[in-house]
Each structure stands twice: as C-alpha cells, then as structure tokens.
Length: 252
Picture 1 (tube, one colour):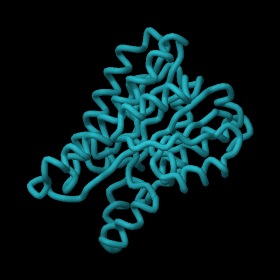
Picture 2 (cartoon, helix red, strand yellow):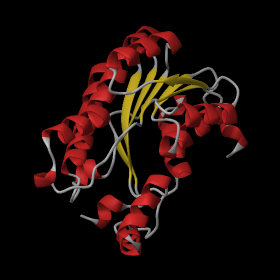
Picture 3 (tube, rainbow, N blue to C red):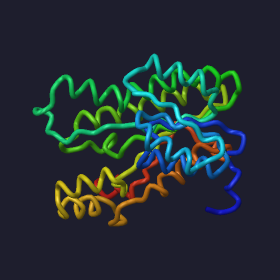
Picture 4 (spheres, one colour):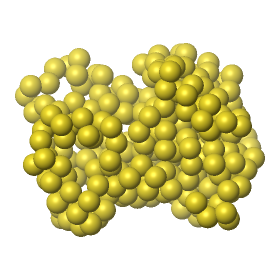
C-alpha cells in the first residue's frame, strides 16, 4: 500500500458487517491500515477477535446475528456514531428456483437485503447531523446479470442496487454518499470450497466469465471499498462499480 494512503481514513469511524472473514476481513484490514477506527460486526467470536487483534489499534468487535435487527441497532448505538457503513454480510444458496422454499427466500432476503436496510437506517441520523457519511454496499454482479441457480440471491442483490441509488438520492443534501461495489468471482475460502465441490470445470467457467480470465483478490475489492469510503470520493454517489474483471462486459 502506498504510504500516501496510510492516514487516508484517519479520524473516521467505520463498521463492517460480516467482517470476520473473506471480503469483509479484507475491508477491515484495509480501513484499519488507512487509519480508521473499525468495528467488526459478525457472529463468529473466534475469527472476529483474531482479526481485531491482528489489526490492533482501535479495531473492535460487536458480536451479532444479523437476523436480530433490534440487537444490531443497540450495538450501532453503543459503538457509533459511524462515518462509514460497509454492508458486506451475505449468504448464498445454489439451487434452481423451483427447488427453493419460502424459508429459503426469507433467509436470503433477510441477510442480503434487509440487514443493509437495518444498518443504514440506524447509521443515517448521525451522519445527517454531522453532514458526512459513506454508505458502501457490497453486492454482486449477479444483481445486474442474474444467476443461474441463484435467483433469490440475485434478486436480493438487485434490490440492493436500487436501494443504494435511493439512499443516494435522499441523502446527497447531507453530504452523504451511497455506492455499490459488485465483486465478481473473488478468491476466498468460500469460493474455493465451491470449486472443491464443483470441480475444476467450475473454476474455469468462473474465470472465463471475466475479460481478464482470472479470479479477483480480496485486496482488490478492499482497495475499491477504501477509495469509495474515503473523503476523496465525495463526488461519487449512486454508482455501481463492478470489481469483476470485466464480467459485465464479457456476458453482454
């Protein structure tokens, strides 16, 4: 990381949902390295506390099941106010739509979409009062391209795009920006487990779906989040940025 960025987030406070591993952990590391006070919102105490210890400084942990919105609001009040909210937590389920159930729909919508509602609803009043805020929603290219075997997940991520644009429209007058980051196939433990189950053909298909013909890294996503969340990105709002190796163009 360039030395110029080491203090880019100094004086800012950030929360990251699902921040204990994968993309979320990468975002936590990057924001902490750039000087932000970061609170990891996650339900896994071992991984969250280990990451907080690794990052040091002002990094803290708020243990929460994102299905519990009342508890989530309480923790945001206790650890806030926040300048940056990164809605990263998400769950997926690979199944054709006719093989899903209403319980599946509720679970996927609850974590992938409604949790972002709850976090954003809780952090906005303090941001509005301060006249500064960054809402960064981690979606998926599935949200604008669709997903064979992931229709409900794609619907939730598509809804997140529309929600983000609406928040941008409502809050520009307060100096608050809201943007989407859409990762493509990113090299995480979760993806590697999917490859183990689906075989090398699955990995090849993921890579071939991008223009760059490779997986992305967690650090590449985290770098995009850190910029969009920075003071420097104050003239960017309501946007949807694919960090996906040109996946949207490749499938056009």
